[in-house]
Image (cartoon, rainbow, N blue to C red; front, side, top):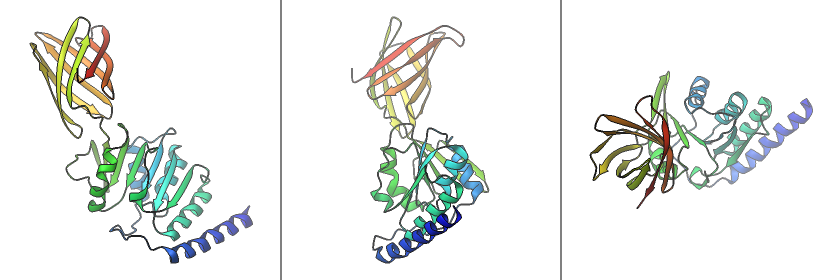
Length: 265
């Protein structure tokens, strides 16, 4: 096994030198600076990475983020890196860590990378690159987690932030909920008008003596409280395109019943 691994390492490094000589792609403003291991682990912890996740690291350097995701959190991972030598080193590091079967590394431009299978995207890039990536990140499936070392995403505020030696910021891609919804629960029929900016929402109830409070959106989960006279109805629902489905509880400890709403009715 030692001889085979040495031959593999030599072959990968030789391939890296050849590819590096041929690399004529565009240059981006993100020099390679490895994240400290404590920051890597905090990024993955904050994103709640687990065995069901596929972690994409854009600008993956020596592969430490996706290797840690596989080795310590049980996830699968994909690293995207332009530097051929770093891609080769990442593959060697994955072999050494015993996770080569669960991770892969692509030598390509991060802006040409499809992210549809990603459940988590990790970044250690410049603010400028983060802003350029933001439209593609917002277009990912609701609930996809984006976690960045240091740099933010402009006026898209993070859902959470921690500071353990370094700043780590987490965003959860929000579902699109803006518009008018016709809600039904029990014998009630209500129109809900929702305004949205990123994960920030405001809600009004149309044509009824009912008010909406504490509206919150996290990924595809929408929760709010409807208040009618002295009764509160606690709604917890999931967004599925133009359909909202979940449960509503009458009062803080009352029974639950089905809640549903359709957009554009």
